Length: 373
Image 1 (tube, helix red, strand yellow):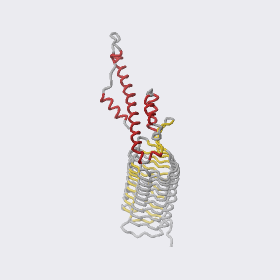
Image 2: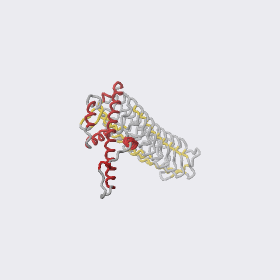
Image 3: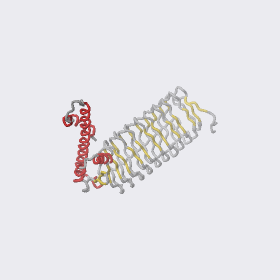
Image 4: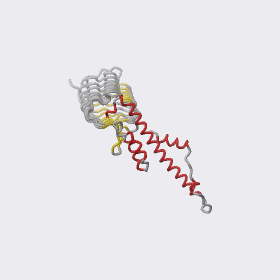
């Protein structure tokens, strides 16, 4: 017999037997953990009230509760264990609160209705396959504090369009975003150290990606990103593997907009000789400089040419830093000179040249360090 939909079942824990036809549930105030498999296959369950004081959702606790549409976790919950809400195919609204520390393996996988999630800053690890095949997921907000994105966390999230990783993330696991076919924008911040194999494989809508210099990119990370045209390096040249972009027929270049803008500023300031020096070894197929943009053709990704590219890239960086230091110290010296002139008594004028002050060597070194990439 089907349970009355107005009847609310009180869950007290401690291995309590839960009827399969339960529709609404509230937790007793003393419950601190929902037992493993407590509501497994309660296909009629629609309403769940989780009390403040609850600390943990056990493994497979609400698996295959196919009528459940909304769940909100109190701030006292620190852990959602593996497969806790797996295959709750109609779950549309999931609210995490600060205090949650870990989202377990496969905890929310195979959802069609879930469209957005906001991972609080207290979460430092998202478990393997946590949101696997959440095909309706369009928006994911990751906050500062998160450190790891594990194996296949967002595998097959075909509606996901953009992702921004906070600066605290150091590791992206193997196949973390594989098959996210609508993913158009990926922002990876400085601090990222490792990206696993096939992490963004099959992201067919991705045309450009920005990479920090802190990261090591192994083989096949962007495998079969068929529309990927450009990699943008914000700070410097990251550590690539020669097969990183295997299966990317549209890939053409690696660009350096920060260096480009710095070089342009130097030229605009009148330091035209740097342009001639860089031009001496640029445009020979190694590193290109066209219309104010510095970039490296994809052909230079081969291991055979990599040492040469690193050498040329280092020379460009050093020249830019030298001319920035020259410009900065010149301005500094002029400012000191003017200050000394302004202090001279008008009734006792001095030779203007005698007021010149050279910037000391240690100060120049401090300027160079400040301007360092």
